[in-house]
Image (tube, helix red, strand yellow):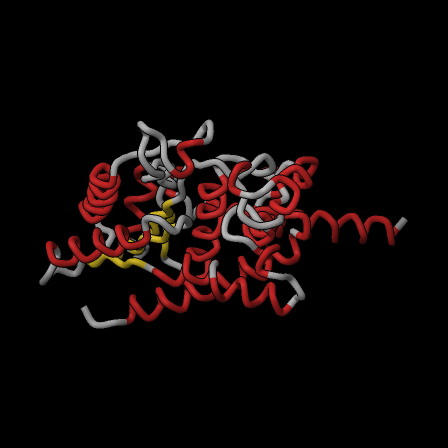
Length: 273
């Protein structure tokens, strides 16, 4: 009986510890906080905020349209927890995805949402200036999609010109997305995968990352249907072969992306204003 009680107490303590850790992680998300909580956090020194940028686009028959949004939100949370004194803004899910009419690129597939480059940059600019108004001094852009990386850099540069001489800065962390491409592909090659499997969109790399972050976003029963070798590739929205994807492979990429982003951002925050 004593052993049972001891085990029960240990189990309860473990559950409480996990719950506290989860609650602590949840507190980095701005949208889960009240206005007074945000105000007090800024006053207490939480003056860095990450704006995660995703996108809503097709990802073949086996992965949801919100892949980029789910992934960048989760990784931004991890980055914020490691940095400390950092919050995560709501994810921007509306991004340029190509011409709407006539449809181009991902817009050829149902469910994809596209906005103009001008609208996109205006959204980023207004969001960043809103956070600066509330006392955040370091506004960070990380983007999960490759096509708008140069626009993130351009908006950050424009904001820094506007804020010159003040204590407020904008940061574009290029290593977040960059690590998901060549460095992650290198990791997968070292695990025996080929470039054909790894792919450029919704292949093993993309699908593995999603399995590591949120497997519910992957229709495992449709992975065979998504294989490029079987269906001819771009016609079904997939470039690569996702059949070798696993959560373990994805975790390698997630860890690399978070580590590179944290390192890059720490350097940026430490640089003289």
